[in-house]
Every structure is written in C-alpha cells, then in structure tokens.
Length: 523
Ligand SMILES: Cc1cc2nc3c(=O)[nH]c(=O)nc-3n(C[C@H](O)[C@H](O)[C@H](O)COP(=O)(O)OP(=O)(O)OC[C@H]3O[C@@H](n4cnc5c(N)ncnc54)[C@H](O)[C@@H]3O)c2cc1C
Image (cartoon, rainbow, N blue to C red; front, side, top):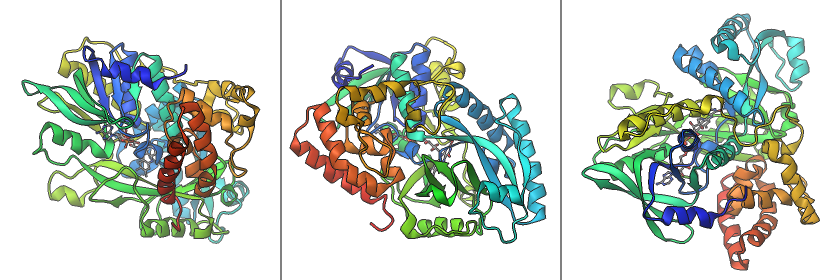
C-alpha cells in the first residue's frame, strides 16, 4: 500500500477529530503501543519528531533475548518475561527474527560447568518456547565453528540459542502493521506541548518539521513513549516533576565478517572489567558491543566516546587471534538506554533497573519507558490496558500475542539480502521493471539497489537520505564510508520520487554528511 504523507497530514489537521489514543514517540515502545491500540480497534495517532526508530531503537545489539546476564544477576522474572516475548516475536515475525547460535568460550573448567548449568536453566525458563537446547562443545568444535577464536588456554565452549534481528526493519514492519490496522502514523512531527481541560491532558500541540505548520490534536488518552526524552513530556505536564530517566550509552563497532564467520555469535559473559560483550554476525558483517556509560544529557544522535571505542576494541582483541583494529572499523554507532533514574541517594550505588516503567500521572498522561526491544509487545499491552482504565475507553482485549507483523513469511532464505522485506521481497525486486537502472547496486561494498530507495519512499515513509541509508537500508550502520559514497545517488532517486529540486538534494547531502561523520571512528 502506497503511503501518502499529505493524507496523513490532512487527518491530523482536521480539528473535529477526537483520537482515542495519541502516542508520542515512534521507537519500539511507541510503535508497539500503536499496533496494540489499533488492533483493538482504537482510533490511534502516532507522532514521531524525527524518523521511526531514529532514537535508541535502531542502535541496539539486535538481540531478541531473555538476557543471560539478568539470569546471572538472579533477575528470573525479567528473564522469563523476555524469553516468552522472544518466542512470541519469532512466531509473529519469522522473517525478521533468526534463531542464532551463541557460543561462550571457556578458558577454565569452572566456567564450563558454571555456564553449562546456567544455560540449562535458561533453556528451562523458556519452557515450550525454547529456541533449542544448549550444550557443552569441545575445544575442537569451537575452533571449527569460529576459527579466529583465541585458542591459548581454551578448554571448551557452551553453545546456546537466542534470537537475532534487524531493529530498524522491525520498526518499519510495526509501523506498517499499525497502519494496516487503521492507525495514522507520521514521522517528522514533533509534540511541543500538551493541552488540558480541567487539569486533565486532552491533546497535544504539534509542529510539522517539514513545513513548520502547527496543529492541535485532541485525544482521550496521550501516551508518552519518548524513550530518553520522557522527562521533556513529563515537564510539559508538570514542570516540577523529578527526572524519571537517566541515559546510559552503549556503542557498537562493525567489522568485516571474516573476523567471526557467518554462522555463530560469540558471547563474552565477563570482560576484564566485568561487562558483557557480544560479537554477532549481522548482514554479512561482525557487530561487536556494547558499553554502559552513564551520561547526564541525551541527544537524538549520540556519539561514541573514545574510551568506549577503546574498550570494545580491547574486548574483541582478548578473544580473537586475528585482532580487529581501529583501521578495520566499518561503522561505529551509539545508543542511549532509557534507564530508570535513581529516586534517592542510596539507589545511585545500585544497578539501575532495566525493567520497564509504566505510570499514569494525575493529569491522565501515561508514560512508558525502559525495558527492551524484546519485550516491546508486553510493554504495549500493559500500556493500552492502563490507557483503557485511565481514560475510560471501552474494554477490549489485546490482540497482539498472535498477530502476524507486516511482511510475515516463513521459510526465510537468510542469504538473500532481500529477506528483511519478508513477503514484500518479490515486489521490491519487481520495481526495477519500471526502470532497469534501479536494479543496479548503489555501491559494490553493499547489497543495496536503487529499487530499495524507491520502495522506501513509496511504501515505507522514508523522507530523507538518512532515513533510507540508516534505517530502511542499514548502509550507514554496515559501512559508513560506503554509505557516504552512495548518498548522491540516493538523493537523486529520492528527489525524483518526492518531486524535490536540486537544492533539496544539496541540503540532504550536507545534513547526511554531518550525521554520517559520527559513524566513522576517525571523524
Ligand atoms: C546499546 C543498546 C543496546 C541494546 N540492545 C538491545 C538488544 O539487543 N535487545 C533488546 O531487546 N533491547 C536492547 N536495547 C534496548 C532497546 O533498544 C530499547 O529498550 C528500545 O529501543 C527503546 O525504545 P523506545 O521506543 O522506548 O525509545 P526510542 O527508540 O529512543 O524512541 C523514542 C522516540 O521518541 C521520539 N520523540 C522524543 N520526543 C518527541 C516529541 N516531543 N515528539 C515526537 N517524538 C518524540 C524520539 O525521536 C524517538 O524516536 C538496547 C539498548 C541500547 C542503548
């Protein structure tokens, strides 16, 4: 279905419209809420100030997981919930979630026993939604699977299963699912204020970032799903409110896949300073991360710190024979976890909670933050349930446990670069019949073709060169230099589709260039 922005704007601009729910924020959380609400038949509007998944939701480690680390911390409830959601997501979006082998290398006999037992418990907690049993593997098998593993002192490995996905592509799939269920979703629309009647929030003030026009939209319930930005909306409601969120930055480095191989991921449960490090095969590359750096401020385009880059490089160097260096980094990206801020001095010294926080303010504003990509559906279900109670909406049951997401397709051919489109793949390829030039690769280092740019504009609401290169395709995350090289061709194709002129192309290249610089280690 071709999506016309003008139609979306028309609906938003109509002052007679009363929405059941307005969701602010188009990351995993907000998109999940929009899918849930629309599939229950509620009249739903989602507003995103930038692009869908521009925030944290395109910058994750790309795991659909129960969290082996939370198990080690004894946080069983969180693990059970996430393992259940992992299974549901695999069932509802098999074209985007892959059952991946993860290997923990053991350099002591003690860790062989410890992780074998721990991962057997992990398997048990997954119950009927298991991705496969974990098992102890020999040193020889580990070396066969990951030839580049550091062999000195290696005793054995533990192989377990977890999910692996493409976060920004899942966000697109959720956005399209919500639209198919009747929701209105728009990117580049910023909420700048809340409207109230008798102290109760009854709508939002918004600005169309593309035109600068302002609108007011009315709703029975407003949901604040703005990730690390939640305090700004809470401040619009009650200026004196305490901060709910403390950002913590995590970065990833992307390398050529030859450092790892295409089949198995590496999980380092405890680096020298006690953190977890993953090396994961992702779109023919190796993704390594992450860090956990508390920050005082947040921004939409966070930048990796030099010490974080060093930490990840040193971490990888400790476990690989051919060591990836700075020169090998194809892309670096940073994301911000919306962790719950400590509410008192004592809490500052404890690990800050990773589970989600959901609350209704006295004004009726509902705020949902924290959690994980893996648990977005459960978070959405709880949020819409709370909106029903708070705004007195009709009680309708959640539909998402068995709701297939847009692009649903079984028997996925993971080696086909078009797999991320699921059931749309053939249509994307067919677009080149309109213009054979669209069949050509945009850059020899990446698998993307012109037809995908056209598809992104017509069917996936891409509005800028960055939307196409960072989140509809993942070029910027996979190879920042190649993405910069591709940008002029992408700008030209998009301008043709959007009816824009040469000045627009130039502006796009300048703004994309500024963002893309952040993805190079030597800027
Ligand atoms: C380094 C890192 C690794 C992670 N790895 C994993 C993983 O492997 N697996 C997993 O399950 N989870 C992972 N997570 C967690 C997961 O990515 C997050 O929990 C999730 O993406 C948060 O989504 P969100 O929608 O709450 O926030 P966001 O994605 O940040 O979305 C919030 C959106 O709100 C918009 N917004 C803000 N203010 C306004 C406004 N005024 N008007 C309109 N829109 C507004 C923003 O532009 C943004 O797009 C990871 C997180 C990090 C940081």
